[in-house]
View 1 (cartoon, rainbow, N blue to C red):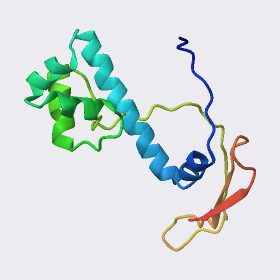
View 2 (cartoon, rainbow, N blue to C red):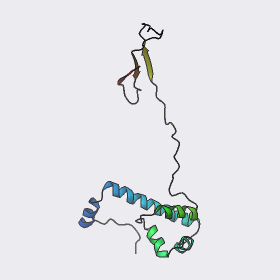
View 3 (cartoon, rainbow, N blue to C red):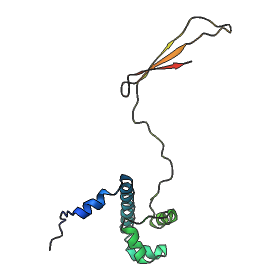
View 4 (cartoon, rainbow, N blue to C red):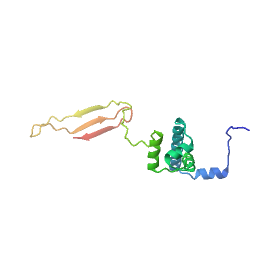
Length: 143
């Protein structure tokens, strides 16, 4: 008996899969990743399904459903799993954005030499040339 994966094709299966929207597929992918992360945490603790079931006060069949990758978890269940397994499943803290690069911007101001009554100079406009990475369009900002 061979344990090698084999390709299986079916017109019915192809038709069903074509009806799945990209949004549904992304959600399913995330559910699968959640199940995988839970299973990895269980292995790290040397736990079987029964061990997690006892910790969570659930039946083993519920744990099997969770690990199938198709279960739509409630947030409280995810939070409890995090506590029991010592992992993070839902990252709620905002991450600081770290700059990934810098752009050189040339700023040129044009000053009208006419003084106003208050002794200030009129500045009709400020020109900012777009950085060479994104755009070369000239943008004008009035002052």
